[in-house]
Amino acid sequence: MREKLKCAERLSRLVCQMAFFLSAVMIAFSYPLPACAASKPEPSALQLNREAVPYSESVSMRYYNAGTSGWIAIYQAGKERKPVATRRLEEREGSVSIPTISNELLPGEYTAVLYRGESSEIARQDFSVIEQDFCADRESYAPGSDGYFYYDASDAQEGAWIGIYDAGEDPAEVPSLLWGYLPEGSSQIYTGSLNGNETRFSSLPAGSYQAVLYRSEYGEPYQTFRFAVADPEGLYAVYQRPDGALPNTAEGEVALLGGELSGWYWIYWGDENGAFEDYLPAGSIQAEEGNVFVLHPNQEAPYGSTRLYLYEGTAGGKAERSVPVTVMLPEDISGSREEMRTSFVVMSDIHVGQSEAFIYNRRYRQAMEGVADTMPEAVFNITLGDVVNNGRYAEYQVLQDYIAEYRDEVPEQYFLMGNHDMMLNQQDNPATQIRMWEEATGMPNVYYSFVREGYSFIVLGSEGSRTRGELATDEAWLSDGQLDWLREELAAAAERAPDQPIFVFMHQPLQDTGPGTSYAVIVQNDELAEILCGYPQVIYFSGHTHYTMNEDDVVLAASEGKPDTVHAGSVSNLWNDEGPYVGSEGCLVEIYDEYVRIRGRDFEKESWMGSAQYVLYTK
Image: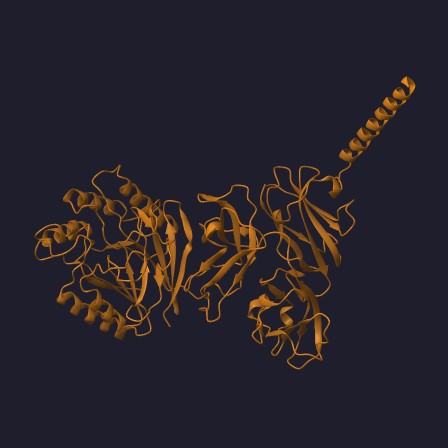
């Protein structure tokens, strides 16, 4: 019995020594352990720009959580002993591009593997290198999703088109399920732009399909690409654009599907290289409220956006090391790329106080520095009222000092009269307040106009009340003289440039034109709206409510009885539907021949607002 035990011990030691030797050999070997020895990979931590890559192009991919010694290896499918290409990574997160030709990635099936350290696999993705130029961005689409077909631009001759068929059908014998002409001068077509008999690409049922490229309208099939629609593993996102959506806007819905949601998912604009770092989130999906995020009419994507990135997180923002779910976007989701004619800055409610240490004063200075640093092409800066906090002489003196300090650093400044500047309408003689406001700001009157770069700008303002108590603290009162003057100014502006927008500014908003406007704060609200609606080229800017530009309906296209309207946020402090909201906002307005772009800016976070990018069409 004792001898048997000794034999068992010797055998156990021998097995351990052999295991140690094999482990040492594997570690010394320059390639990683087989995938079966690694922990379960995270597929989403490695995202390929395209899963079908023509030979001669590059394999582009985005990676996450690679650590400080991460690397990517590309293997021939089923041959993971020796990679055909490798790339060391210098950062925990980033993008890499690996050429097919110089790395001899011949047509065939491949697997890209992301490693942390020498052998710890954390993600893998399969892809194909194909011989032909005609292909889709992937070989398997999630139900409800869209993508792109690519082709040689020289094939996009007049009459060239793509047809989608069931995989088992003969294209010569059956009509296409979907089809579309190739866009002239392009080498790609968005699947969402293909037409069908009440069918969209995103509504194709699960199954196998073929895309056929025809070089002429009645020619023979030239190239074929096979793909599938199948349920993916885990969470995925889809973008749906409604019929009748305004061109060159991002109007639509983003939905998270394929799994149970928990917490929050923060949505960022981006391209194949990742989320844009200089933009705040476009919004969020809160699991308790559903799985859909709505992009509203007139909302646009920042120029260059090709994807949305959805990061899991909390109410406070995305998780630091979360890996996003991505969704492909169509091309026409931003204002068409025309030459910008001019631009100007709009801010509101700066509420300057007597003390330099006052938080509103600090935010005003921060906004001025932000304008100087990020909006150098703007020709002027207009502040939509409530320029001081309580309408006191000492506050106006501080404001005057600030105007002088920043005179050479920011564009020329214009100012409006607000209800706080009028001391909240709580005095007998508003003429005193108007005089202090004019002396501090240098403005000629509470209502005036000017022309810059050939465009007309009209400023309106409350003239106060004739007797104490006539107005509520937040109301504006416009005299008949001011309204008659407005009619004359609008007529002159329209005659001077009938095809150009006319910009009208007032501190108080028109009723029912965005958040916080359910009741009228302009005594002559209806009369003013009627005057403005007589000129469809009018765009009306206001402040006053302090609502953040993250809210819905801050930019609205004209509707019956209302002109185009823009709410410009607030520099001093902000509100949303739940109460006070930390931040300081304004916007940059860019003028183009056919539209006006409004770009929300968060001065506190020193970033563009992904949620507040809008276009208003003027033609």
